[in-house]
Length: 266
Image (cartoon, rainbow, N blue to C red; front, side, top):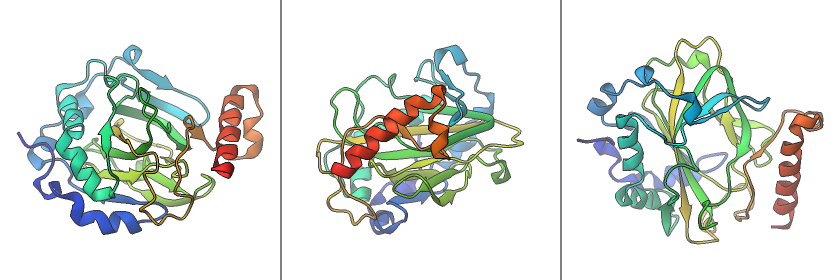
């Protein structure tokens, strides 16, 4: 059974487009999954056990649930497993020019691959965890795959890319069913999700991240910011500086300060 469309068997042909994309390297691949496979996929009917995942509901991460990959739907598992294959990872290396790519080896539980967002859902600008949980090696690429067939772009839920400080949105990528977005992950590639409003179905996505054994993975790229890697936790940028000071938000402040200090000395 074909899972990924045949036209994406060789991602090397998109290398130039990936490298020059702004505000940081990325590529948008429409009709990513094989048409027949996607038509047989019905995420609207997937019933998830919220107690077997993580539900986020803070000011900066609202109405978002992640699976932790427990009892995933069979079709979702097939997609995730395909994105973890050696062949696909080699394809990503050709796309990005990043050598020694690998996927996480922590059993797909620490890093969830299936996400859902609901009415009023929002994900503020952030950079993800910097390192593979088991080895500590650099987190260098993400892929997000939009699965909800009946999604209307007026509902929001689009991927947003920000500047190197995470303070200004520079690009918005609409949520189009069966669209994949592959993008570089560095300490400066801030991204998020626009607020969801008036939606008639849940926003379903698959998210997979990739790592490199090379601790200087970005030196071949001409970036608009430092092409360095350093260790940091998932770090959010709140809309206004005063938003960091309520007690419930101080964890964001601590992480932001650590990230800022490391970025200055890197």
